[in-house]
Amino acid sequence: MDNRVTSAIEDYIYDLTDPQRNWPEYYFRQVSFSRFAAGEILKLVKEASTFQESIDAVADFSIKMKSFAIMDHDNKNDAQIFSVAYEVATDILDILNAMK
Image 1 (cartoon, rainbow, N blue to C red):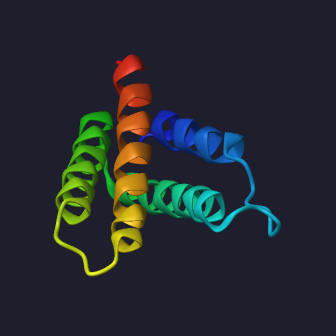
Image 2 (tube, helix red, strand yellow):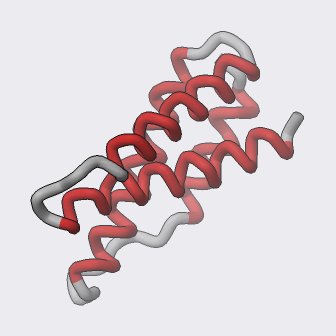
């Protein structure tokens, strides 16, 4: 595990807004899903042993989330969690690539 990677993602999570009950549902879900995705990515990189493995894990997560987002969903809102997770993963990838 690379401590620089975990610290960067923990900082990213810290900077995310906490969801508020009085928000419109769409924004509440967006922020909630962002925090969830970042937490899942943090778990993945903690399992990686090198900086590059961390980047690869986030890239794989990003690809999976994109493929889930573009699937045909019965309810359009069902794709939101995957779209948000993809956006979070690409944000984190940008941060990690800047750290190289």
